[in-house]
Image 1 (cartoon, rainbow, N blue to C red):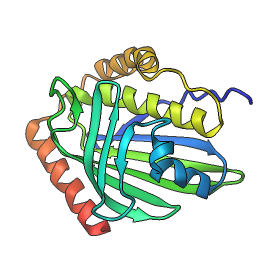
Image 2 (tube, rainbow, N blue to C red):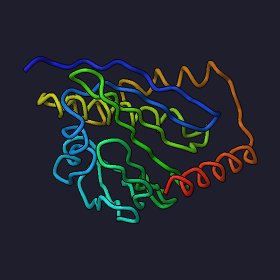
Image 3 (cartoon, rainbow, N blue to C red):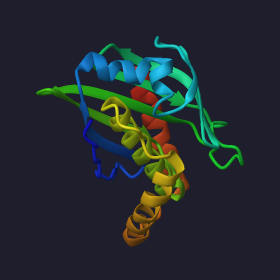
Length: 194
């Protein structure tokens, strides 16, 4: 098997949204299985419970972190979304906001374009959230290509300084009120899509 290198950094869009795009090896059905099958989710995102239906439970556990929520969108082979509840996150309780994750899949020849959006993300947490998703998606690409993925926290530690630098260089500060507006808008979009 060839080693699949991914070096695509995420973008901050609409002030509070994480956006990543990655080319995944294989078919739409193969990619969908990695997003929705408990055993395959464990190879890149985390172990736990995932019910692939609207309202289904999402409970995934990874190194020092957890994702708890419910499926908000499920269009097989094209779109999957879930909420992330405020008590999700690290064991020290640093993550305390509700957010939404959406995966969109589109065919690209013999590959699949994955577009991941996670919104809203408080600016203060953005570098860490970006680094985590970067590492998770690197692990997804490696797992799908049948390559042993780099340990999660090692990859996070390698990409985090780049995200911290990028966010410090931007110097943007976003008000709590603006964040709440974005959170409300994100919730409305999720409810409209359901």
